[in-house]
Image (cartoon, rainbow, N blue to C red; front, side):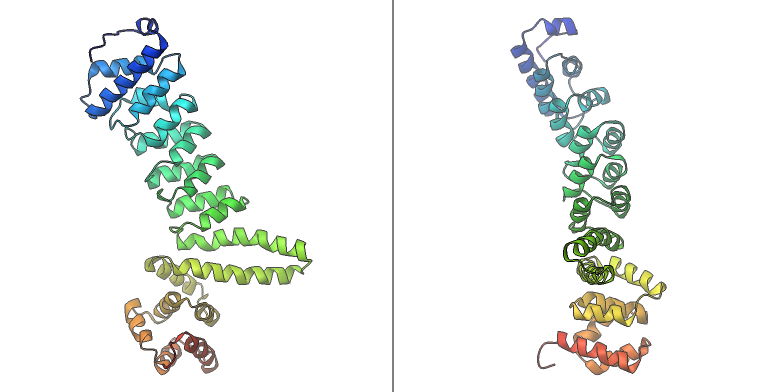
Length: 320
């Protein structure tokens, strides 16, 4: 750096337009070097600039420094705690902050900082959980809208625990492609409960009938969402359901009636203790007699098997 400015008073004596340009140049110098060995003079000048009384100076510096891969923690902290106009561009895009720093900011700063971090591309599980755990509703909604963020099961569960009555947030959560299968039922119940109340009030339906309609929608939506989950999650869910004696003929019939082939196949795998790929190959033959034997081995009665076979037959291509 050719600029030789050593203290705040000397920097303040320079006019505003020149200070803004200095901030841009300092930011570009540090962004080009991008390492822990950055120009010490530039670092020291950046420390002075983050304290500048003019917002335009700090904003100019922030916009340039967001391209840096390395910055001292004191400069990061000062920019992160500045007003939104200065901190937002930096918090959304800066690569100089690791997960520990981001999590610390989420847990110590306010709504604006949390929401900015929730917009970051490729947000990690740890930071996503911190936002789910302590973030404002705006920050959590931004996180759920961020398709590039990693939302784990514990993060989703925390969102449901904290905002159980926020239907729009539950709908956004339900629409995520990576919603864990274990959370689908809880989220759909929250959403469907509202619709049950709506049906009851709007059409004067009996509570029992409204609940019945909602439960039917619940089951269909839940099955469609579960069908898109990874096989490991489907297997985990159905194994737990079987352990609670909930993997009944009604569940299998529902899967067949809604063309949930993966769920039906995995359900049989769990019931019979056989690998999914083996069961998939057996069912791919479209052999109703073979399916009947499998269902009998799984412990279903002849009358139940007959009903399941009728539903299964409707899924088969004509001619089988």
